[in-house]
Amino acid sequence: MTDGRDETVGQMTSEEGGPAETDAPPPRAPAPEPSAPSEPGSAEEPVDPAEPDDPDGLARTQLDEQEILDLNRRFAAVRRSVGALERALLQGPRKFSRRDLEQQQDIPQRMTAVYWRSLGFAPVDEDTVVFTEEDAYAIGDLSAIVEDGALSERAFSSITRGLGFHMGRLAMWITEALVDEAKHTGGASDADARQEMLDSVPELLETLESQVMFAFRRQLAAYAARAGSEVLHRDTDELFPLQRAVGFADLVQFTRLAQDLSGAQLADMVGRFEAVSRDLISVGGGRVVKTVGDEVMFLADTPEDGAQIAASLAETISAEPDLPPVRVGLSWGSMFSRYGDVFGPTVNLAARMESVARPGTVMVDAETAEAIEAALPGGFSTHGGEDVELHGIGTVHLVEMRRDRSTPLNLGL
Image 1 (cartoon, rainbow, N blue to C red):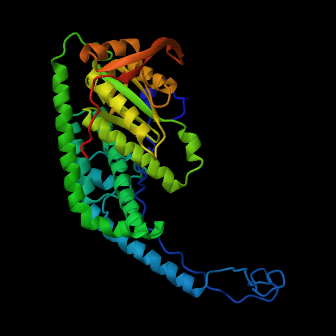
Image 2 (image 1 turned 180 degrees about the vertical axis):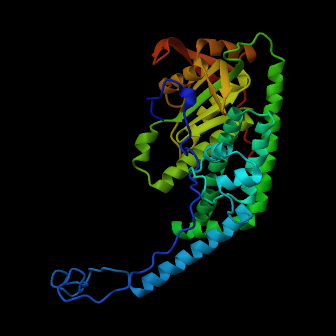
Image 3 (image 1 turned 60 degrees about the vertical axis):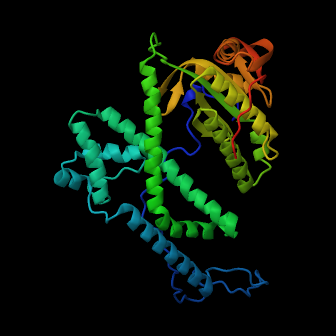
């Protein structure tokens, strides 16, 4: 990323933004307009390809019959595929409006509107028929928890917003992965690859659904265990209660390189960077908070795990022939977690240090260096040291951290 971050660095949003879903109907084929007879010399008179101002006959005012036939066939195939996919996904016709849900299912229109908006879909008025039986069950189940007082409307909105954002991103990820696979293995054009994706999703749907639930349950179990360990901590800072190592790793000169790459090459580079980063962070016992194009943000529960991940990112990615080196900023301290993100001075410090690190190196503050040495004596060493003025933070004594006697992470691949 560029160095001109917002002051609250922990509040960056991902490149995908919210879900792109608009709940729009399938596309329609454009019908060719009939050619009505026109009076000689009128404005509607068709252009003759042999006119003197077009001696080569290149001017064309409408598609020829074969092109119209091919276009209609393509649109018909898309409509069939989208229709079949929607039937499989929605599991029934759209039959309810917001008013219907209130009158027939006893779901307040306000709750339906909040639910739909929080999922990331465009608002619908009270009489537009857009909801299916499955929609009614989903909205009704969560709304009932609010009505019973087990969940506040504030939490209701937060949970549905998280579901919409992350499920939207997952849907985008899966569909684009299938498109990329069709291009990579079969050499299909982008349009043909997307048609293949539409046709293949119904066959994969049951497996994908079960994988989503499996991953959700495993992740929830892991976060519950981590939350349980926090219960045992005493004398925590109520403003920033979590002690974590937080790091940022950023590809060097990404903006300049992006100017010289095609879209496919740029996507391959970003994908490779993200894959290597995620694997290293996972093997090192950390967690990816988010990726933003050329940057990854990660957390670790201990200073030594944070140091191991940071050093491994700098070493491994800098050795990748198809990737530019990374610069890494790492800090240990207190922070606050909310909405799948972390906030606080420690987070801002790590981001600012990353921006001043040299390519292929890890920059830490003096307090973090001391915490790492106390946790793993001799595992890492520090070099140099200077007072640096960091934007929005002030003067901080920074040192470069390098691997000493610790063993590099092994991806086991």
